[in-house]
Image (cartoon, rainbow, N blue to C red):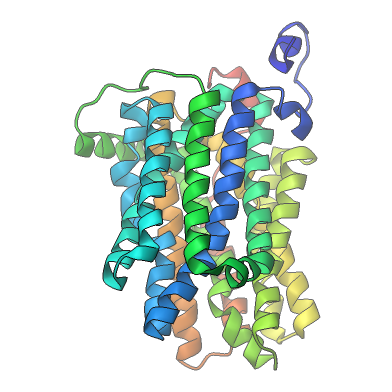
Length: 412
């Protein structure tokens, strides 16, 4: 008897206890989805280092290396709202498998084609990420019912952050050991493995929405989100909070230099918020209830304000960890957001949400870098990011919907 069956046989319970991470794996489809996700995350972290090394080795240009590295997020700004409707108009299992196969083929070609073609292939390959992410996010509430979905969403984000931390530590070692070409081929293999796992373990479901034309579906998805004040404010909260709280990442290297450090200190500055985010995700999805989400969102920017005092590295790392922990409010709020959206709009909703997230963070990165380039001290830029972020978060004033209300108001 599965976890869902045990919960159904307990009438009269006011609310089921939070699902443990171990209990998540009693759901067969989740086991296969999670295994594919973990493989892809690890492969992507190694590939990010491999791309930078491969392009720099060919060109000896930091600019072209950065252009290639940016392929991991720039395509999502456009691809999210335009391509995510496929997660609603086609069977989501088919979308995920097709995207994995396409990315595997394109990434495998990168090491063996001329530079310009290689960079173009990277951008095309990452165009398949938004529909994959949208399809996976949309199918998860059907795979994990009730509270299990909240916990499963949290575990997915913890895995993402852990992969980033491992990537900071191990990505360079792997690339140095087997070389950038084999590292990229290994990343392509993780996409093949993910497609095989989804094909073997995820059941077929029909398309969630009738096709009315790609542009029309994109427009309808945006209208649907903007017609709901709560969804609209939720998006605004996530976009502005993540933009300001993660802006310091863009100036990690100049900040480390201003403290008399180098690449090692910069790596610590990048790892600190990721560590805080991972810990915060575990706490918010397992121990603390929904009333803590807004305070956590404020913490993500309040923690940056003391940087105005130009503290030393140990204090700064603590502040960045606190900011990362606060920013993890995004994870449980994302689960609430997805459950509130009607099933036939979930793919498009996640596409719009992810595009706004990428655009906000990208603009914040550029603004932080430009401010330092203009002469502001990195400590001042981080502190100002906190102050501006506080004002932006307060201005959104979203009314956070509780998880229990979503379980009793008919959302599925």
